[in-house]
Image (cartoon, rainbow, N blue to C red):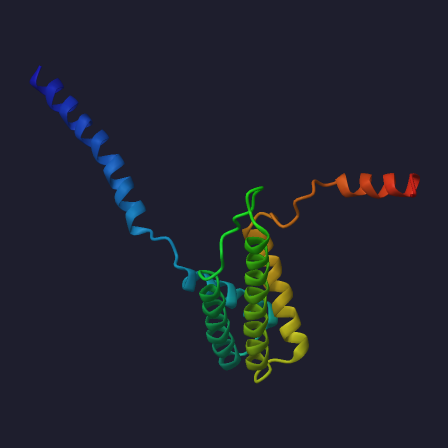
Length: 164
């Protein structure tokens, strides 16, 4: 009887220890920071471009700095407060704030284009932008493509068959 009791107690202890060990393993794995994600993204782009070590290091540092600058632009962006109760002044203010944000984004991208030109060719920079866009589409699950596949084709056919 004692033997069965000891085995039961041992099994119960083991069963309770497994979830605790699993939790500890999850706690040890940390969620990568934005900076770490940008470094990974830059490394993948550098791999695709086949950059040499020195150029690669410079590219990764510049890419991460660019991302940090872009992230810094987002907190000042006003939330969309659209609705039927929005006044013309509020709508005007919202639109102008969007223009300002877009201009700051453009200025930042232009600044870093000039930085990239110091160690990359324009064709390489164009490739960087393409790869970055592709990665963002994959990360966002292609949310930018809100139309369902085939829906735009149906619209095109309807317009062609019913001009006017």
